Image (cartoon, rainbow, N blue to C red; front, top):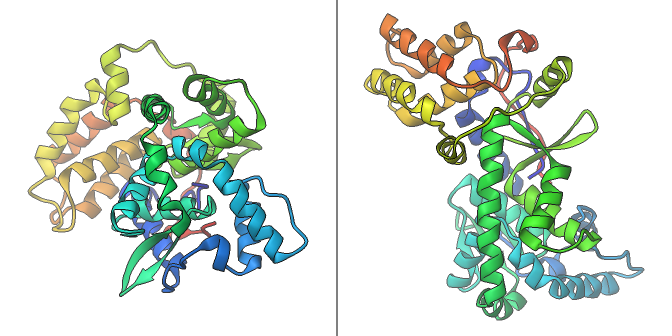
Length: 359
């Protein structure tokens, strides 16, 4: 989705991926406002709210003079592009649609990723999200219950989904290596590799919707970027690369790129395991050792200094960090290729991570 959290002014220990994910979940829950999901976004939402959703650009619906004409045009356009949009859903959106179909149109939203998928599906006018009996849930538009299963059975749909899966894994690998990607290049590659068609306004719409529903998107220095979900301060990274004249990826082996797609390079595995074994019996009860080490590694990639990493580690532990823990932390940091060097980091501010507005 469009990046709706802002952690760039926080101290390094407050920029961990775990804290950012918690902030995203809290923002999604607050956006539900306790109301139950409506039975139809197109048919029952106030015209003003429907117009705001259409303004996001997920569907190309012309402005109509009356509410009735607007709803009719939105329904017609949504049904006309239904098969193409289904082909290009993000993996989380697709899984949520399947979950709603199995649940007779309703599905509980159990994770932050599912909540975000419900919001992007709402911008597609496919479903609404809300709270029922105290739990978040999503409700699929009733008129989609019959056509969607049939469209999912198409051979062309299954082939395109396979290409989409490979494309998404490739982008995630590149994001792990660089921290960000230019959205324009990703959009063109999507059209070429996944859709396999000429670049048209409709192909660009499908590509943009997939990228925005699958990755963090933000405009930085006038350029639309895809961001690694842990990158707290993209402006600092872009500024550093501009000052250094850009960056070229080194040649990589197949094993290294496979590791990047999985979120851990082969050369990072040994130090990752060493640090995890060193701290796992000293962590706070609410901390998981694998997540703790992941958070520290991703902070290191963003240019956190050794002092900042030690402070972040100290917040995770029940005891004071030992010399052996700090040695393992230093070794892990040195073995993790960085997106940005420490000297390029901006001044740090105190406080708690800020949460912005959802769509």
